Length: 178
Image (cartoon, rainbow, N blue to C red; front, side, top):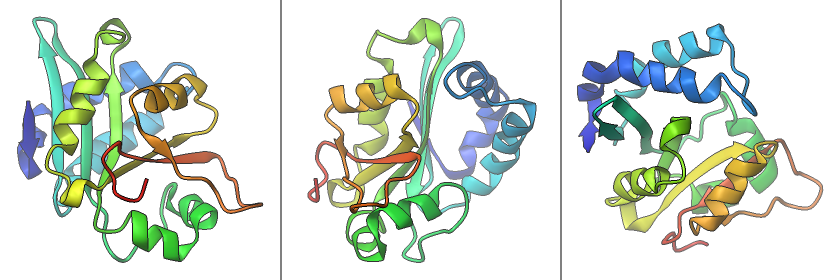
């Protein structure tokens, strides 16, 4: 299922629970403060241009979700964005990422992994990406996550020589810049 904009706030408590379940363990090991930040960030993110949430649900509740929005032309400097700009350079950021659908979070509970849940969430959330342009970033240290994106057909954007940071930028399988 997918919902747009502020409608996600009806699911906020459940999404925070999924986020905590997924990101409190290895390799992320996020603590209570980071989980609180996600909960605080969600209402602000829901106001972003093109915000949407795809979620998978079963009898036990929400098994996973993905959130995303359209990356603004004024590329942000908060969170991991500075690392992305350092790695790719401003021209490649503008060409490949701005105006594209940015997948901010993808979280699948451990019990729901290996059943196509992540693939389904990515497919659903990117279905109406502008000109088939979608992207995401993840930690270079999350080797299983990096391998999963590659297996799902996402394409790593190589860093400029000597600029590799702690993040990996991926373009969606249908992104024309891949």
